[in-house]
Image 1 (cartoon, rainbow, N blue to C red):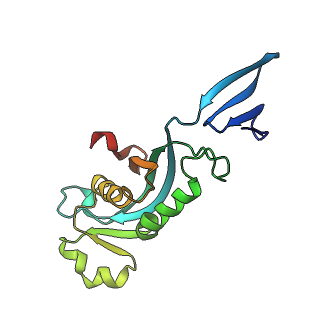
Image 2: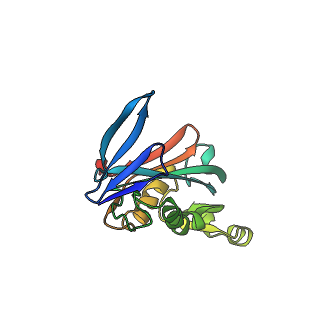
Image 3: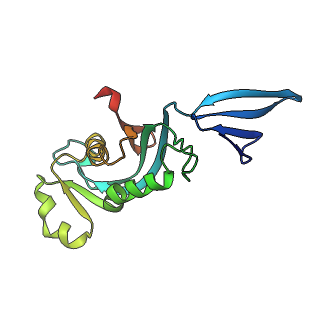
Length: 186
């Protein structure tokens, strides 16, 4: 079965077998057809940003004090673009809106504008902290960029459908400092 879509430059002819031909102009010469297979895997990434404060308990530098960052989180999935022509998400690995909703509900809603402290720090349970700050998260680890990243991986790793897979997450603490997890390394 052949379907024609006019929403691309040139014309797109989609076949039920998962491929399509694109009619592309080539600098005023005759039209050239190229075949692309939709069954190939594609990586898609959605970027997020949130503001969060933390303190590194027992650290020997200025980061032992409560301070904040604007974090940038990149979540990358791999999958095969949907090939069902009757599906409104045809050609997508994941709807970016769905990915945004998942990350927002599981990470951003909790961590955005939160103060994250190591639960072992004596000040973590102080009345000043609990009375003055509305959004305090006590974690069983040192809240470094690396450990926060691994925590986010554990939250997101198994929450996607089987046809797509989490392959990497990058957490930028500053414009020049980040931690990155890649499924291929683990």
